[in-house]
Image 1 (cartoon, rainbow, N blue to C red):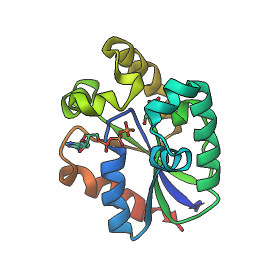
Image 2 (cartoon, protein in one colour):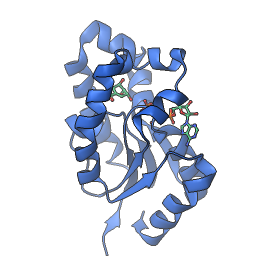
Image 3 (cartoon, rainbow, N blue to C red):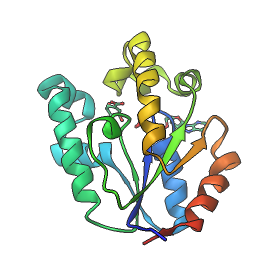
Length: 169
Ligand SMILES: Nc1ncnc2c1ncn2[C@@H]1O[C@H](COP(=O)(O)OP(=O)(O)OP(=O)(O)O)[C@@H](O)[C@H]1O
Ligand SMILES: O=C(O)C1=C[C@@H](O)[C@@H](O)[C@H](O)C1
C-alpha cells in the first residue's frame, strides 16, 4: 500500500479547499496549511498585489517553490490555489483530493469583496472558461473527488472516510 506524506486539496477558486481543509485537518489531527496564505506571508503582500506588481508568471514560480518546500514536510493537509495543479508539479507522495463544486455554486458563495481578492475571477466569462479548461486536469491528478456542492457537514465524512482508509503519515 502507498504511504502518503500529506493530503493535498485541489479545485477551482472558491470551491472550498480552505474551509474543507481546516475541518479535515482538525479531524485528522494534522496541521493545516494554505499555499496562498504562506505566499502572502512570505512576500508580505496579497496575491492580488503580486499579480498586479510582478505578474502571474512570477506568482506561479512562487507557488511551485512553496509547494516543493511544504511537501518536504509530512502530516499536513495542504490547500492549494486554484491554478497550482495546472502550473506546478505536486509531489507524488501526496494524497490528492479534488474539491469539486459547480461554477454557479462557487459564484453564489463569493460576495463581491471575496471575488475582488481573486484576480482571475474579476472577469466572469473568462473565469468560466478557466473553470472548464481546468476540470480535466483536476480529475486526472486526483486520487479522490468530493462533491462539494452541499454544505460541509453533509460531505465531510465522505472525504474523511476516504483519507482514513489510506496511509498518510
Ligand atoms: N460547502 C460549502 N458550503 C457553503 N459555503 C462554502 C462551502 N465551502 C466554502 N464555502 C464558502 O465559500 C467561500 C470560499 O471558500 P474557500 O475560501 O474555502 O475556497 P477555496 O477553494 O479555498 O478558495 P481559493 O482557492 O480561491 O482561496 C468562503 O466564504 C466559504 O465560507
Ligand atoms: O485559480 C487561480 O489561478 C488562482 C487561485 C487563487 O487561489 C490564487 O492562487 C490566485 O488568485 C490564482
